[in-house]
Amino acid sequence: MQKDIVIVGLNHRSAPIEVRESVAVENSYVREALSRLRELPSIHEGVILSTCNRVEVVATASDHLVAFTSIKNFLGEPKAHRVPGPLEEQHVYTYQGSDAVRHIFRVAASLDSMVVGEPQILGQLKQYYDAARQEGTVGTILHRLFHRSFSVAKRVRTETGIGSGAVSVSSVAVDLARRIFDRFDDKTVMLIGAGKMGDLMARHLISQGVKSLMVTNRTFDRAVELAEKIHGSPIRFEDFPRYLKIADLVIGCASAPEVLIDAATVERVLRERKQKAMFFIDIGDRRNFDSRINNLDNVYLYNIDDLTSVAQDNLQERASEAEKAEEIVLEEVQGFVRWIGSLEQVPTITALRQRFDDIRRKEIDKSLGGGLKDLSEPQRAALEDMTSAMINKLLHAPISQLKRNPKDDDDDATLYVAALKRLFDLEDK
Image (cartoon, rainbow, N blue to C red; front, side, top):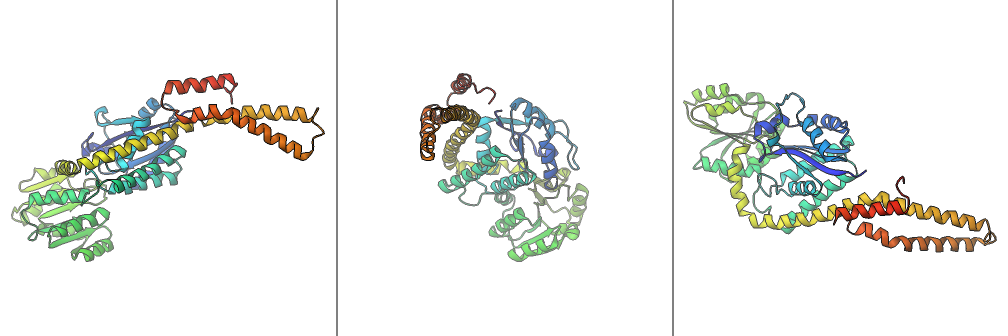
C-alpha cells in the first residue's frame, strides 16, 4: 500500500506563542506522546518536533486526509499538565508528499526559522528523530527523510553563507537588548537558565560589553560552570528572587514548563528598586515570565514572538544566500521524491521478477524430467545461467521504465503499473 509523508504543525508565523505552548510536548513526555501517536490507525511512522517556535508531527500515512484529521485531534489532546483549548484551523498548516519533504528540508536548513541561518534547529531535529527511533516509531521512509534532511542542512551550510556571523535566537535577543539600552557596561543582567541557550546568551552578552552578569539554574553546578566561563556570579535557584532587585535586564532561557517569575513578584521588586525600570526578555522553550508583568509601570516584557522584527533585519541581510539555499533544497527534494517513487514500484518489480522466474523454473524442471534428463551437472548449471540471463534481458526494459521517472507523470506511472499487473497476472502478488 502506498504511503505518503504528511506534516501537521504550528509555528511562529501561524500561531501566537500562547497557542504553541498549549499544544507543546514537554521533553519528559515525548516518548509517551510518540507511543500514543503510533496507536493512531492512520499513522504508519511518526516523529514529534516541539520547540519554542514550532510544534509539528511528521508522519507517513496511506490516506493523508484521514491522517491530517487524526493528527490535529492528537495535538488537541491534553498532554502532561496542559489542557489545551480548541485547536483553531487558521493556526495549523498541513503538508503532504513533495511539499512535506520540502518543508522538513527547509526546517533542517534553518530556512523556516524565525532567525534564518540559526544552527540550533538542526540539533533539535536530530534530538527528536533519535527519540522517535528509540521509541520505534521511525521506519524506512522517515529514517531516510530525516537523514537526508541532515545532509541537506550540511550542504546548505557548506555551499552558502547563510550561517555567517552570529545567527541565533540568543543573538537576536541581544540585538533587541542593544536597542533597549544605550550601553551595557553599567547594567546588571540576570540569566535564568544555564543550558545551551543560556551559554550562547551569556557569550553574546559578554561580547557586547556586559560587566555584571548573574547566572541561575535549577542545577546549581551548571550555573557555577557557566559563571566561571564568563566571569559571572552564580546564584542558587531558590535564591534568585532576592537578587532581582539589582537586575536591570532579566533573560529567561530555562526549559521549565511553568512560570518562574509572576507579576506580584515583579511588583514587589519594583518597590525595592524605587520604580527604576526593568526589562525582561523571555526566550525559553516555554515562557518563563508571567505575561501580566507587561501591565506594570516601568516594566517591559518581550517574548520570543517580539523578536520577529529584529529577525526580519537578519533575513534581509541574508536574502541572497537564502535564495541559493532554496535552490539546493529544491534539487534535494526532487532526488528524494524519485527515491520515494522507486520505493513504491518495488512490490510490482518483485512480483514481476517472481512471475518470470516461476515460469522459468517450471519449464526447466519439465525439460530436466524429460528429454534433457541426461544432462551432466555442468550442463544443467549452464542451462540455469542461460535461462536466468534471458529473463534478465527480457525484464530490463520494463523494470528500467518503472525505475526511471516514476513520479514525472503520476497518471502515466499508475497506468503503466496497472498494465504490467494485468498483463502478467500480478494483481494478487
